[in-house]
Every structure is written in structure tokens, then in C-alpha cells.
Amino acid sequence: MRPVQSRRLFLTLPLLAAGFAAQPRAATFFPAAATWQRKAPAEVGMDAAKLQSAVAWAQAHGSKWDFERNQMRAFGKILGSR
Image 1 (spheres, rainbow, N blue to C red):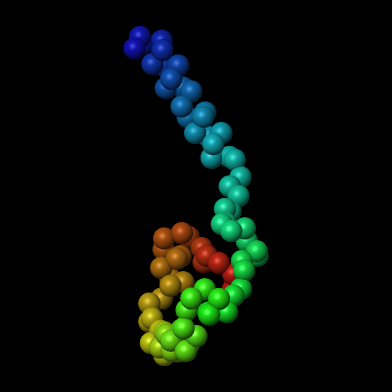
Image 2 (image 1 turned 120 degrees about the vertical axis):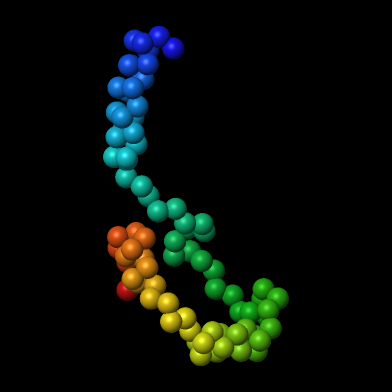
């Protein structure tokens, strides 16, 4: 590449990066947020008693990990709704 071209590229890249960074980022959900379907376990081929047993076990054996502290470290804010 010739010096003039490389200088032009060198000056253009930061402008492009700044333009992309300034664009608002929309949250992408699939399916769309607030449109999730609710179905009984039997409707999707699950055993309701086993599912309830799994939920009870998970609630009784919850994690002691400090998720909020880790989110602050990683993202600078708490994610999700409170």
C-alpha cells in the first residue's frame, strides 16, 4: 500500500469505529420479549412430578455465588430487573 493510502486508512478507521459505537444497541430477544408461551409440562412431553421435584431440589440447593458482585465486576452494572 502506498503511504497516502495507508494514512487515509489510518485516519478513516477511528471515525468508522466511533460511528459504530455511537449507534444505539437494541436488545434482541427470541422469541420477542413478553411473548413467551406458557405450557403445562405434559404439553411439551415432561413429567410434571419430576419437574416439580427438580425445582424443589434446585431451590433447596441454591448457589452461594455472589452473582451481583460478579456482574458488577464483569459488566459494571447489575443485569436484569430487580
